[in-house]
Image (cartoon, rainbow, N blue to C red; front, side):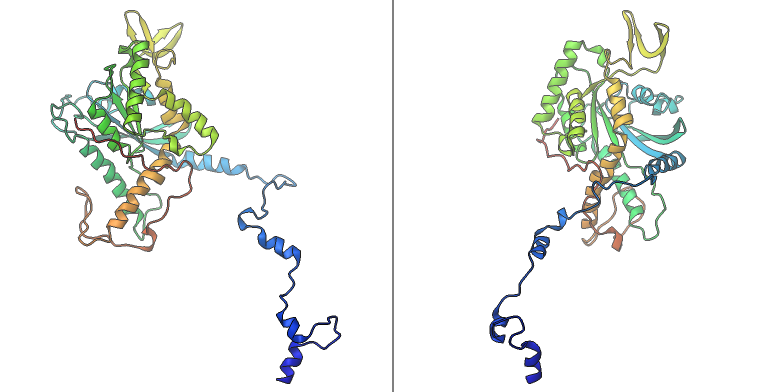
Length: 392
C-alpha cells in the first residue's frame, strides 16, 4: 500500500502546493485545442474538397472507358404502348426509332382483329446507331379499351409488369447468378389518350392511377392533327387539371427533382404534358428536303416540326435526355418497392410465386436478398400518392 500511495501521490514541492487528496478531486485540465477538435462534428471534418492537382492524373479517362464498354456491350430499353385500337401506337413507335420495330410491322401477314381480351405481345429488336447497340423491346396491348365492358382491363397489364419484376428478382436472389441479369422490366409506359377534346374518361384516370404506382407513365394525346391549336391547348389544360385533382403523378414526377437544374428542366416538360403527337412513317418533299409527315389537302404535317406537333419533345424525353433516368427509376424505385414487399411476404407460410411463372413452393432466403433501403442513385422517387377511386 505504501508503494502504491507513493506512485499515485507525487512528493510535495514538485510544482504544486495542493495535497495528494486535493489533487485527486481536481478535474484533469483539458487543453483548449482538444476541446475544439471534439466540438467539430464528423460530417464537417476537413476533406479533399478543393484539392488542387500538381499535374495531369487522367481521371477524365474514366468517361472514355465507360463509353467504350457501353458501345461493346450495348444496353437494353423496354417500352410499352397502351391505348385503344386505331390511335396510331405502332406508327408512333416506328417514328420514334425510325425503323420497323412495332408489332404490326414485324407481323404484316397476320390479319388484324380486335381480340376479346387484352393480349400483350412483345417484339425485340437490336438497333444500332453510330456504333451504339440497343436491345429494344416493344410491348403492345391489343384489345385494351375496345370492349363494351372494360372493367379490370388493366389487370393483364399489371400482371405482366409484376411478372417481369418477379423474373428479375428470382435471378437476383440466386446464390450463383448470372454475370449480367437479363432485364425485361418495363422502363416506360406511353399511354395514348383519344383526341376527344373534352376531358379524361374514367377508364383513362383509373388506368393511370393504378399503373403510375408500378411503372413510369407518360401520357400523350394521339392523332393531335385532328384538333385545332385552340382545342389542343384547352384539352391539355383539362387533362392537367384532372391529373392534379385525382393526385395522379405521371413521369417526370415533381417530388423526384434533386437539384435546381433538374427541376428547371422537368418544369418545362411538365408544362407540356401530355404531349400532342402525330406519327408518320412516310417521307415527303418539303422545300427540297425529305421530311417525315402526313400529307393532307392543305399541306404536309411535319412530324419533327415543333410548330406542327410535340413529337420532338416526346422523342427527347424517352431517348435523348431521360432514357437512363427512366431505367434508374425503374430499378431503384418501382422494382425496389416490389422487391421489399415480395421478400417481406416470403416469410409467411404457404407463399407461392405469381401465377404463370415456373416453379412452386416457398422461397429460400439468402443473405444477399434481405430487405435493403433504396440505393443512392440519381433521382430516387417515392411511390405516387393514391388517387380517388373511379369506376368506369
